[in-house]
Length: 245
Image (tube, rainbow, N blue to C red):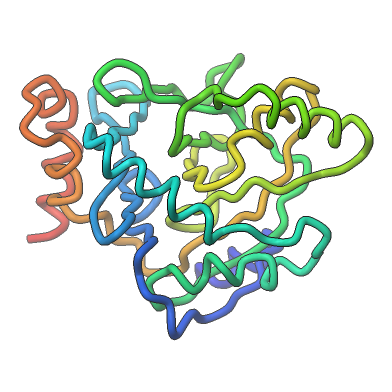
């Protein structure tokens, strides 16, 4: 079923057999975790507060977050290639073994959900303004620093280039208006698209697996004993614990 969904959305389905697992995404949309170096960096899910709102919690370990910046040096790919599988090769080697869908997602409809106070991001799907399409969760500073790099991409886009940012998600989007993806590379590119008001283009990688949520320990790790976050995430934690008993 999930393979057919992926193919219907334009993903090329493939099996990763020799990935080393230093970059991984687990769970299903609405209860997923991005892991780097075998530790959770971000967990996203529904708050379960009675309204349809979603949130993401990022680890407060700054040194750990910086490790993703180092990893990005291994994610560089030639911008002129149009084969999504070839573009994704450097990333596929970092993923845990399993089946994935890879596509070039052109003219994407997204909103960006940066982290604010206490390493959290909150949004409401289906809002008429501001949250249409996929919620893209940055893994680095947003808006990105380095104005010179940003301006360079703005100029390229205005001249007709369509550089690809890279997103990784726990499964193909069943509902494009209520889903989330992790932005693992290309923050300046995405910001440049926003500045030019041109719809962004992505290299979009989706994990294909049974719909099982991420582990409760992933959420515990990013909360790291913070009582306010424990309260905010209590309903999601109960859901994860129930599904992993």
